[in-house]
Length: 311
Ligand SMILES: Cc1ncc(COP(=O)(O)O)c(C=O)c1O
Image 1 (cartoon, rainbow, N blue to C red):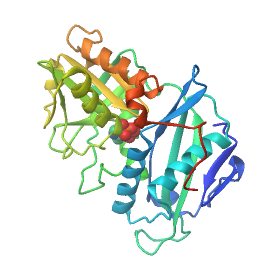
Image 2 (image 1 turned 120 degrees about the vertical axis):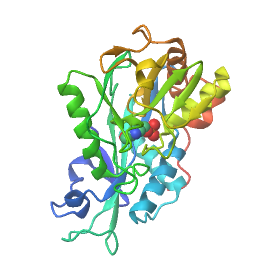
Image 3 (image 1 turned 30 degrees about the vertical axis):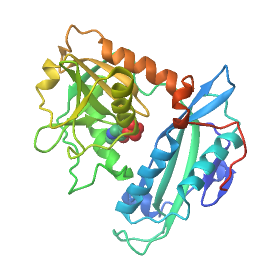
Image 4 (image 1 turned 180 degrees about the horizontal axis):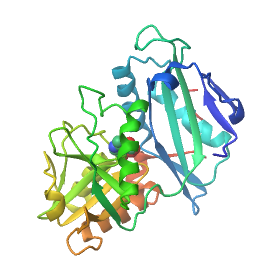
């Protein structure tokens, strides 16, 4: 964490001033939501491209709605704040942005109403979050939080304890990443990634009703597979043992990017090598996010061009 500036409640301020009280509701009870957004440095163009900003902020506002948080910004303003933050930090590298909307009141008592809503954004340098050369995964004994307990479709701060339990267990069992099941025992997602299987030349991924976070990368994969390779995606319930028999598996997310899985519960996926569909999707994804595919320019917001219009 070495960025010099962050955005907090309407102002760009020195990072060391970005502090909250120990009494903050969002800290004490996890009552907040966030986004994780990547910016990719393109050396040739001397540019940072922020990937699918609009879709991230649309999801942030959906999370806010679920949590009864009201932000005083339009999506265009949220986008401009983000671009301006990277600019003010003079970042010429890959970055990870974390906008957080949370209950900022300093009160005791669990509830969502009658509390002040605060908003911060940080931008930090970041490389790969997980190995993108082939992950060994284990099915977690921790079940994914249920929509009626803590909705996974909202990116709620407190819900990441569920992810942390799964990730910790996976690492302690010498896996690289966890795959979580729903309470009904169907495949849900990774600790912080959506999951895709390749079965008979089609993509299969757990449906929106399987307690997943509806990932921006998941949506990107579905669109790219169809548009670029004519591969359809089936969004449906997925059984655990389909993980053992799939032709290919990969995880995807802003952090994980596209990360092929080479084994699940110590059973090799296919022959244990990264499969052709995972490889070509990964290659295309990296070209697009670095702004090397003009036909996907609408997904890539350049930081060092023009002046923000909505601040
Ligand atoms: C639990 C969870 N599922 C899925 C994802 C993937 O979502 P996205 O592609 O929007 O980053 C993430 C994270 O970023 C996540 O935390």
